[in-house]
Image (cartoon, rainbow, N blue to C red; front, side, top):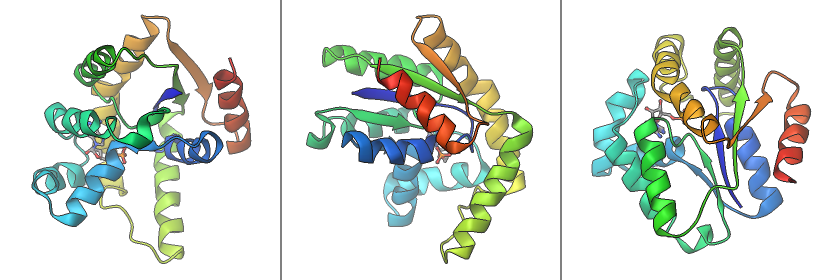
Length: 193
Ligand code: AMP
C-alpha cells in the first residue's frame, strides 16, 4: 500500500503514520525525520537544511525530491510506504507522480487530516512539553516563532497540494480534531476500501 498523509504541522500525521507502520508492516517516510537525521549527522544536506528548518521555512524541492527518490528504491519500500510530510509543494507532488509513473506505480490513498489553526500551536507546545518530560530534546522548530512561519508555509505552499489531489478525485479528508482513536478509525475505514 502506498499512502500519502497530508495536513498542517501538529495535525497528527506522525502519530497516525507510526500506528500504520505497525499495522501494515510498511515504512513511514518522513522527510522531516530524514532531514533532522541529516542535520544531526552533519551531512552536506544537513548543513544546507539546518538554518532553513530552524527558521520554519521549507527546504528546497530539489533536496527533498532527491531524498525521497533514493528512499523509495530501498528494499523495505517494495510492499509500499507511508509518506508523511512529503509532498509539501505542488512541484514535489508532480515530481512524485513522475517517480511513481516511471516505476508503473500509483498512490492507493491520499488522506488529509484537517485541524483548525487555532488548535495547532497548543498541540506543538504540548509535544514540546511531553518530549521534555520524557527526557528528550525539543525540536528546534517547535516554538511559537518558527511555528508561525511553518503554518504560513503550509497555507501558501502545501495547501495547494491538497487541491492538486482533490482535482484528480484522489483526496479523502478526516477531521483531525477528533480524539486520536476516532481519527484512527476514520483512517482505517478509508484504507479498508
Ligand atoms: P516536519 O517534521 O514534517 O514538520 O518537517 C520539519 C521541517 O523539515 C519543515 O519545517 C521543513 O523545514 C523541512 N521539511 C520536511 N519535509 C519537507 C518537504 N517535503 N519539503 C520542504 N521542506 C521539508
